[in-house]
Length: 164
Length: 351
Image (cartoon, rainbow over all chains, first blue to last red; front, side, top):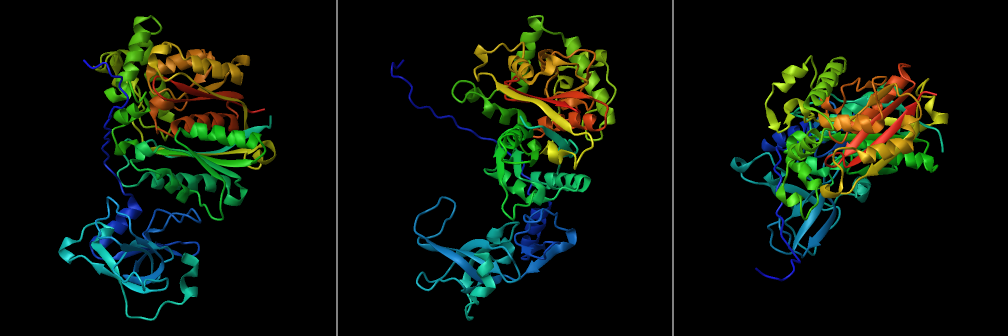
């Protein structure tokens, strides 16, 4: 038996969960399985939250069941970052661009990746979603592979300045 | 010391398994109910404090989503504890004592049904020597119960009496999970689940949430004609190593009760959140309670144990009996850690 003092030991920890997404997130996930992007309208000020959550985080009121809003799969880049460091859970070739997309009609932004030119990516760039083949759709935002630029003039700064 | 009182409270049902809603969606209607009952608006709130556990949620920083139920714009002053809401209340109380706030909103919430609670609880043990053995929470409590029984501290009959009393009391509590008429003989005929603990010696696993308002005396009467003034509020923690503790008594409860002044006068109502029958007996003794006190009129933790909210709920249940005039002096207890490691005592009076 070794006389060396024990300085390090490994203690693997695993806990298993039967995770519940929740009523509101489930509604969102069921919709995206059908290729629909579902937001939720605040009954107080009418802002549209995407993805939908259980309640309005500003007014602390539950979203009404009839407050679901279907959004288009196109929008505006409100901010972006060029990633040059690998990350375990993002299997993309470096460098790539992460973007925050404000879908048309939404008031909160969606974080995703852009298949675009590193030199010309910019705030205000108009983009659209590129989806996986329909037969691969699941209850996941990963149904959208990435966003790509639209051949449209940039959005006016005033149209998204509240959402940066 | 400033006079500070519990003035508002709401709770969810204690539920064995909430299948559809996530833990924030359990919290939202409780918060709504509190606002409706009390007329509370966010501009009245100086401080928000919550208790929940990411280990129960299975997600890091899960507690932040709880703020969706509060409304955090314009910006609020807010804090979170990885502890029962009773400790969040303590932090809010200190904040008011220090003059940084006059009114605070406090909540606790948890959804343990998503994971394996007895195993999750192993993560609160000593990470080098005890936790790697993954002892489940019920087996750990059973070791304590065994020490108590073999040393003559208490008997299986006395433990069963607590289950009969609490589940009987819980019949009048619409939020309770395990309630009904049981008998000592019936319970003692049940098989062991971790010798000497039977199923009835254990609190249920409960999903749930509770929400509370405390306020300085000046604001308290806006909410209650008879506020539940906090006259003593203490929490004491014992060492982590089981070997250095006396597991057959609850020394930390005793010291907390002494410092809070519990024994100075008669206690009309006590609400205890001991999750096992033998622990309830130890807590009763540490608080110095006898037959003159109405113990666990709500059923206590043995009738519903929404972990991370259960302690706060005991304080809310005790306060409600001061508001309605059925008690003048009430004590509530909350616990944390294995085998009653850390205990909190809150003494409230109507005058």
